[in-house]
Image 1 (cartoon, rainbow, N blue to C red):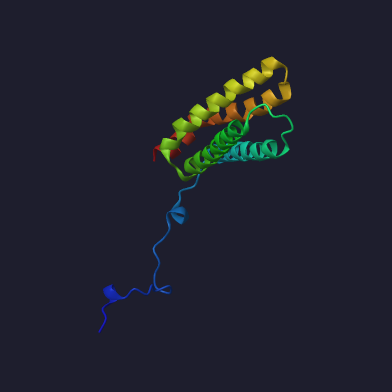
Image 2 (cartoon, rainbow, N blue to C red):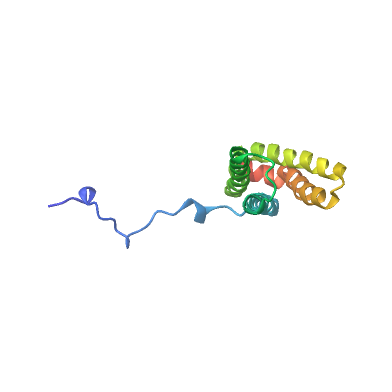
Length: 146
């Protein structure tokens, strides 16, 4: 006779343990906006990386440099998306890396603005500045501190 503890066949019709995502507390609006900003920024970096790698006419770098740059940009895009998901799930440790990356985007946007590319500079500056402000508002702090 086999006991229940020795039975390796899972019981799919028995009571199931609730998953953490279904038990999530309601997210405040700033957390949703931060998630969307980081996710879209990550997608844009990945899209730009693939597009520039496929359509690059001039060879400013050798093959190793191009591969290194593509890997670096792909990692940046992936990290932005992962940080967005971590903040969305309530991980307080994701706020500092997200803040650092957004500060870097703000610095890069100022170089575009001073170089005359106002459209690109504002496209980088406005979402990054919004994410930075929203990372410090009280509902986001309370959400990430719980």
